[in-house]
Image (cartoon, each protein chain N blue to C red):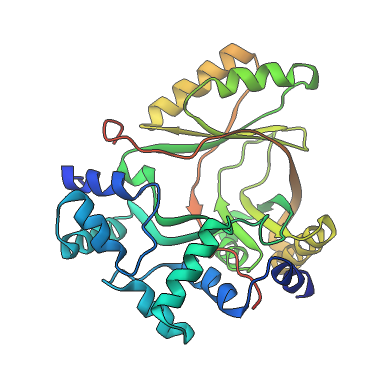
Length: 162
Length: 159
């Protein structure tokens, strides 16, 4: 979609977060000088067009006691990859789940699912449960534990950048 | 699941907090008084919801509260990339990779492919350029795993 200058202002005003007050959209509206209804309509359009995936919260898995997490990766036959991906993504201990291209011969896996648990044993148990769910449509799998964060910068959109 | 319940009690959360964590991952209603709607679903007052969300955000249980943007829908591009970096050159390569502003995050992982990072750029063509630059600077092949399909449900806690 084409973003007009007010859309860009709205994105800038909300990208650090939404005010946690009774009428958050009204607060944003008064900050950028448009009406509350306009803010709600524009946000609705941005959601419809996919620019905003959703308005909500992202939980910190570590703060919730999920101190162990692993990136599980799966080689699933192409014909069932999309439906199996949806099943894995729906599991309550999987936070992110994506289909990605393989990089043969180095990398045979096409489904990536981030699994969280309170211990490494728990994560391995969940990996086994996913393997069972996938059954024979999955040819092989692996798990990659993170050792260190080397860089982490939040995504910031600049008006010039959009 | 006991692991999750004990995790919740350790950080002093009750069933309404757990319900809020689950509900707010799905989305805040786009209405003038969204927290009143949420409160109605949970059987608590609007004021109570606002106070809880504020506490969850302040205490770091929510890392973010607000709209989640998809930069690719605005003409931006993202790509997950991986490299098999020789251990004795690891920090040197990490510095070369991280020096690119297009590298949004970068993790060391326990695997033959031991460096995993995300590139965020304006265009797909720019992704290819940065990948070539990194390969040239480091002498290490970069594997690219762009997203083909996403399955987002979020992460649910037991109340």
